Image (cartoon, rainbow, N blue to C red; front, side, top):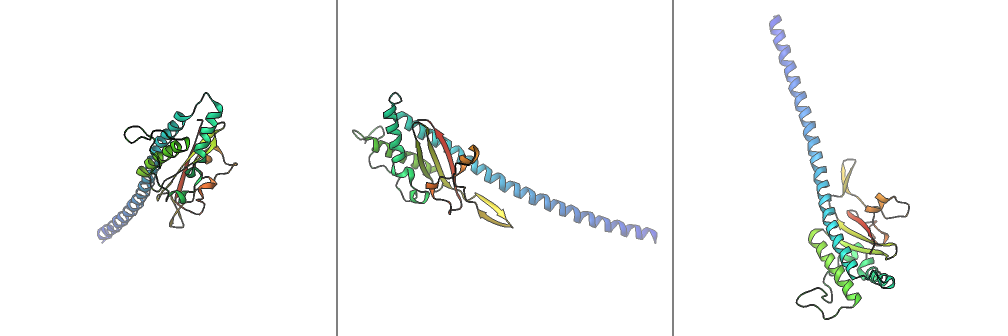
Length: 213
């Protein structure tokens, strides 16, 4: 009788151990699944930032190539042409309907215009960069502000469906902060300018670069 009771007790303990093991395995797998999702979102963010870095270098190179660094007045005038361009201060939503095809081709090779005005060349440069953005980012937009003396600020905007957070078990898109003068340097890198008008548009992200033309 004692032997049978001992065997019965052993079988009960084994069942409990199996259930505990299954529970621990389930918790572990859920944790791994969450980590995998976060890692995927991080990788997508890194890829977008990598593309934007390339696009920024292209934009900055175009701007600097056109400016006469030996003539302060000319340099300031050229920089203002870029910030005065229609696209430079248009909101994110307005730019979704704006063409990325310039009215005059100012590049090299066949079909090059005989002579492009400053405004046409600026339009061409911005159109080329925006076309490249459209090929690598969802719903992109580009803004330029500042001046030659203090530096130009290029703001790259795009819609990121993975820009989310979980609140009370509900997944929702985040809204980017609007830039203010009280923000620190790190916050100013990812805030959206007021002119972007995305305060009520969750999912839109911004990345700001300042450079001296």
